[in-house]
Image (cartoon, rainbow over the protein chains, first blue to last red):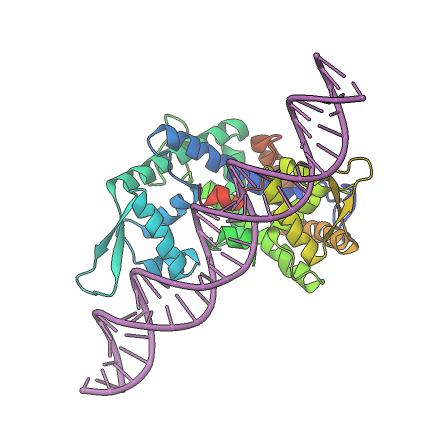
Length: 166
Length: 166
DNA sequence: CATGAACGACAACCTGGTTGACGATATAGA
DNA sequence: TCTATATCGTCAACCAGGTTGTCGTTCATG
């Protein structure tokens, strides 16, 4: 717990190790909170943090519930429930697939596309705000370093269960 | 969505804005996943990502349920439920407060303290692993930059509800 | 043409969050 | 001193999102 310990012969730790995850989560959270504050102002008060990831996973051509579940790392049933709620909010629509009558294709509505486009613009603006604080080069270094440590990991979307319970 | 756009006259964006939150979350998640993989090996297979934050919030002297809820940004009822599950897992214990019979003081058990101490050591080790990849200075810069953009924000623990639903 | 696999949906259940209500206790004021 | 007011912890009801298991339908394959 003390901040002046050394770690198996390497340099002094400098910062305690537990600060890193907290700052990463805090950074994520502040970006997402800012995004949704702005999104609410621009006609999307119902959007939730989850939705952006789901929209990305659906993609421009649409997908099926089972495929969406696979991309998000959750069960097809969970994906189905998420789709239900997005349908209720008017962000997506289920269309029958004429070539395979078992499956339905989930596509973004105009409202959903609008949210996606606005989100991209807002994220660019928020990134620019970070660039104003850190400088362009430091921000690029931060992104590069995060890429270096996270590699090509994919982001599972099972956050609630992952975080809390078994 | 294209990565060569410019943002209102500033430098070329370089990276699309939505990569930043994804990488931040990915970094957080990989640290926490590594922590819990190691924690499970060291006798704490039941520990969940949430618990570490709760342990920190309880602190060495213990707290009450209502105060814990305030620190974590959730209701006292939610804090009470979390305490219940922690008691069941043997991480904390409720003690009566002789000076105020309304409240009970929640304190870490030996098992809980063990988890906290081991977590701190593992986090230091994980940070050292990042330092091996990025270099000590780049890592320090990354931490400093995250501090600069997140400031003295406090981390609310209402993750499940925050992320997904109303 | 029969078999096996995949889709979407339904049901039951777990966790963790919320609000509202309640008895018990502490505290401040008339 | 007696009486409001506020806080603590708990209980109950509810919601969101996750899980597994099951099932009828439909496609694909041998």
